[in-house]
Image (cartoon, rainbow, N blue to C red; front, side, top):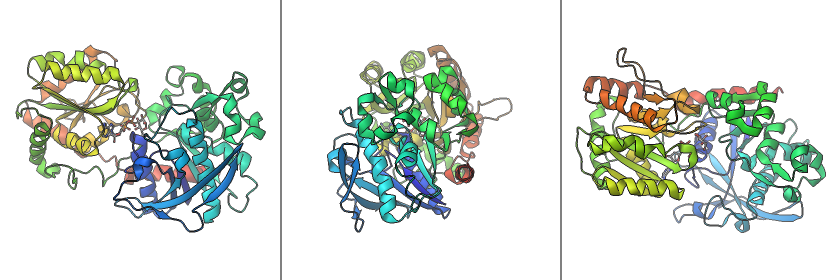
Length: 484
Ligand code: ADP
Ligand code: GLC
């Protein structure tokens, strides 16, 4: 199949969260399977590091198209995804993307991504690439299905039978902008195709528009697919998702088998596998040294790697862990940045327990790998979690996840049963400090029993959540979309 995959983030060029990992690993796996995949992403300032080469595409160094009142001028440059032969097409438009962050709060934020959609489709035309599937991701590219329908259906040559897929990675971000921006979408002549009540109320919701017009809608885990069809989980979009329930499917994300593999990981002190799990201890020592904490073989280290936002439920952590930290039964290593509230709470926790807690405020891919390899436990108390990747990385690294039973966390971590020895982690249901504390306590009860703990680690390491397994579900979905 021919697939145009359009995304706002792609690792390692520009990553904010899990979308970047999925946008690299899923297309790479489709490519490995012989599909013709073209990935389109913005050429942000941060992607242009001195070690990277972006090659201009012949005849596409200066493309000019009209989008509403704007003349969009862009070039297309390519780079190969590391450890893959997948070629990524970057939309080079400095006026829109040569800025400090990936996402901004600038007044043209909506247009930065409208432009990405038009540029990607226009590049397909110029490249002579006729996609069977245009795959959009999250609100940033959710207007693609409508743009295809309203603006490009005339191009029977290039888009003769093209179907669209929208993947919802996170329904909490919908791309809601004032109706005065309608002209900027280049869809003013198709105003009647937007949700009319919303338009009359003065707003355009990009995600909703995508849900209305995509041939198929996917989200990133089966449980999240169910959750967002309830009013509680899906809010005002729930009725629209329910209305399309036959084409809304939850496909669990995969993980990259190359990027997150303790046997080959170049970012960690000592590589290890299920057969040489003792090697993990060297990584624990290294992590603690790096984070300025003393090492003790008897005290487990819990790790957190996260965007520090409301979604992640991290306000539970200090209260839940306090008794264990005070009793010297646990250490905690945190990597993340985000809202002041959470940064402040982890700084405070570190101040109170300088020998047990260390917080690195910022973004570091290397440290993320070191934590996956060096920690004994991994905490994800998320309020909601469409899929979550770190719990799957943790399983692969023999790092036992403690997760709340929501979204993809519920689908990927099975509660450990110390009688049967089955299960891969510790799961709690209620979003409360005491439920999290109880789950941590269950883990600490098993921890001293080395054989049981080893069993628990090996159970996790035996799980296969790689894209090699999940990719066929997308292939099936694409095939089905072609018949709709
Ligand atoms: P989300 O997409 O909601 O942030 P995921 O679990 O799907 O959650 O993916 C998060 C990804 O971002 C993981 O690969 C994680 O390691 C990475 N990540 C998050 N915060 C940081 C950070 N501060 N430094 C390095 N990697 C981070
Ligand atoms: C989102 C979600 C996360 C998911 C990721 C990749 O950012 O918050 O749960 O794993 O997208 O799909």
